Picture 1 (cartoon, rainbow, N blue to C red):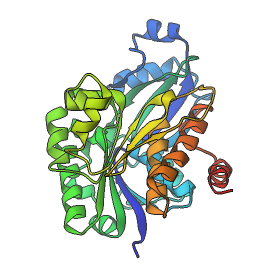
Picture 2: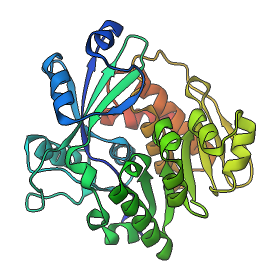
Picture 3: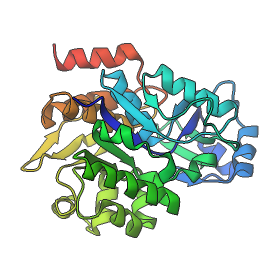
Length: 331
């Protein structure tokens, strides 16, 4: 028996989420709808003009949100990440602990520097715009990968955002190698269209001959495969992933279970904030397939969970909400 269902590696970012208008973007020179990497000065400049008292603060990062979701549904997860010995670093460490996720952080190994932060700006149309200062997490490397946690997991889950630095890419490859040498399955998420648009070559290098599970949305799938329609893109993805999920927003999702395609119906909802929807889908799905659920059942759970996430503010469910969703799946 493995200790963990999933060990994740990825950026450790404190998410600071707040509501804005389109005029905010115009006034502050922010490009709407994208994840933009910024330096510390630029992020501090933006933080001066937002009401941080009204903002919602949580530990996050793409894979961080996913491993928390796994924990909330009753799975056992581990997160390998990097924060600094500052106020936000200690907040991150304690928030991850409270979310029931084991991790590699402790008081003695926090280094000097600045913990990464992500300003998540949400407009009335529910679109999320992110300005991210990576801080210390940009130095995440092979030294931060916990080999024993990977070996003691059913799955390794790799966040695509790590691809933006050479040390991050090497950490992804190193973790994948450990997993493959020890019979641990590997899941990769592309994370964002920009990761496959601007880092396609290193991303292809990380994926290698194949991965056991790939998470992508429609746009990422078509960019990565260089196809202009989803039917052709999904056939190309079979060459690099044994199984995969293509999320389709309000149209649900498409799952390839290694043999057939399964269409996952969306759940009707009123979207107020799309931040974290993909991370939640991946977390609920990974919980399902590592805890005895079929691909179809796991997809249904993931669809329920992501529809709930977009109907509220923030990328994380309350514990009772996760329990309610599971009860709906297994009445």
